[in-house]
Amino acid sequence: MNKHSSQTIAGLSFTAVLSITNVFANEVLFQKYCSACHSNGGNIMDPEKTLSQEHLTKNGIDNIGSISALVSTGKTPMPAFGKHLSDEEIAEVAKYVLNQACANWSASELEPIEPILEQCGTAGNFDIDGNGEVDALTDGLLMMRYLFGIRGNALIENAVANNCNRCTVLEIEGFIQLESSPTGNFDIDGNGEIDALTDGLSMMRYLFGIRGNALIEDAVANNCNRCTVLEIETYLQGYIQ
Image (cartoon, rainbow, N blue to C red; front, side, top):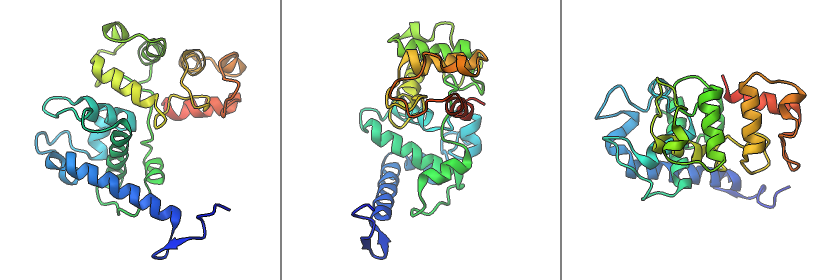
């Protein structure tokens, strides 16, 4: 048993207190940097781009990575906050937004974030250009290029759908960077690292319709946490709809 598990503060477990403290910290960040334009999930500049779950999904920013990228780089008239907040703080703000959107902006500060996100199906996805589809020759190619170190215009050239919601180098790089971080979802084999010849390759194979042992052959790290065909296929299916 964890040494803190039996400790309580005001009737709450030590772990619960830490979780609640983290949620309050997220709300403080949101109130300081976002509430002027997005009070209670609204948008004083554009009523079609509120922080409701409907509008987040419609506008292709319905996961931690895409919201984090938008907060970091900004998009006129929204300023960029990447110079004011760390990547970790930005990711926490994104979690707070998704949590509240799922609960129609009425969630109690004491409710844990992750279970609510799972209920809403907003844990993230591999739709890098945000056009509502995950495609090998756009999203898959973008991921592979990024993991091989390609940046700038060469990253997105002929690899972004015409109906993209994330279309620019900044938007694409920001999204992939966040989804490749510890809070993102691109670590397909779960070994704590994002690699082109494991995670990238298994994603590309899946998008091209390859299943079974051929999907994971020589594409899973030795220190994987998701190692079997079933585990990899199930994980990818959850993010590629």
